[in-house]
Length: 101
Image (cartoon, rainbow, N blue to C red):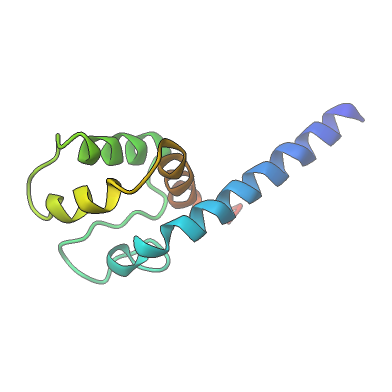
């Protein structure tokens, strides 16, 4: 019975993180699409992207290690994000399109 309770608690925490990430990602949706699929060529799709990749990419923008293309726009956006914001947004986009979401 304890394992079932733990699983339910873990699922609730993931659902909560998804909703938190979704709320924090509102500004991202302007370019990357409401469902993580961009309708504009210069902006990549984020839907279903691996969480680790998204975290790494956002941190690279923040550290100014990504500088090509429209990087200046991403640098300005990520400057306002905390480490937790980056994790929450990355989790949200990584879960979009999965069976669970």
